[in-house]
Length: 449
Image (cartoon, rainbow, N blue to C red; front, side, top):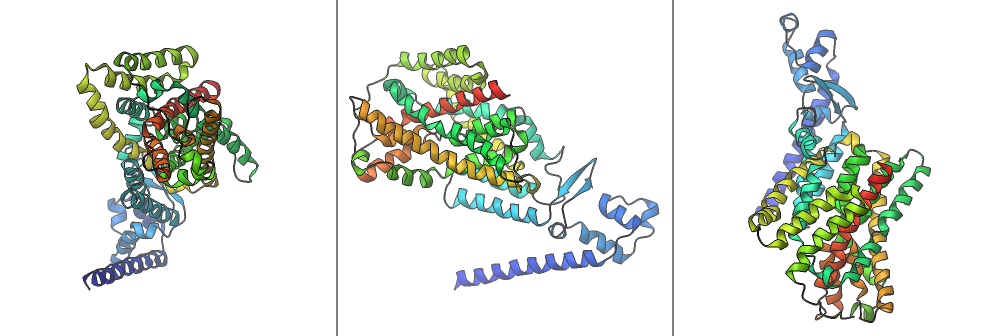
């Protein structure tokens, strides 16, 4: 009974808000606007000459025109705000607020990448509230965006934290699993061709730089997607980031059906040999060698690879535990908050509700699926050619969603054989995928930047 009573009160409250919105819209439209009146309504200035002409009816009309509810029923326009103008997108803003609520629901109820979807969803609500100027030059969301996303700082700090959290031991113990991580990056280059092909659709026009930025979604690597979008296609940063993190969050939904479709039950039951122990010296040398090889072959990837290897070196050297723990906890947590809010700032209606944004979402899903399938199929090939058995499921972990993709591969394997633990084997291609997506990003920036 109490739940029914609460539901009834909630429905009544929603109906009251909707009715008030309709009333505000009708009233504001019905009251005419003239000369000095419109000046007061649009700029908020109340000098002596204008204030003498005010009447209670006009004053009430100014109030109605300044409400957020009234703005949801207006057409898109630029209205003065302090020393600049802001865009009022009408019903599109209301729609994007609904999108923000969906992201928050997925973060809380479904626990889909909640650390990022929650701040992104909440920032989507904030940026689409009309007449606030929260994303204007001095708005706090824009300050966050300029401080760490516009200059590429936040993605680099995230990579530093990922390096401090990641154990490269499984990759060192079985280096050939790096090939599975490389195979999973096929989704990146396949989606590059897909983005170029979308230019044949009327209303869509992507440059080669924008296509490169979009293609990184196929690696399921949010920070790298943001970094490349900032370098090559900043106007598309919002939809690219949301698509990348959304597909990262939905790894447990997207990957298992694809893994089962392209493997047989017998292949999913393959048990791999236990990994050899990896010594401390090996773990210390690995990030240093990875950094030096990247510097020699692809210097443009150094910002991301350098941050990743520094974080990992701090973890493995054993002499800076305080720094390592800070990167693993306080640093990555603080940056994640600001990164999510800054990305959500790009989710305004006038940026997102475009045909190109829909194309990015579609390309991202196809690219991520292709990357998963490519990794699994290459795993099957390696199993045929290798003297040691290789479970093809670990190839699906070659995308960069660390460690979620490895956990999914492990779960699918255990669904077939409860004693078949693949998590450590899957971490090899998983961390290789992180390095692979960063290398792909450096290549795109070097060639097309």
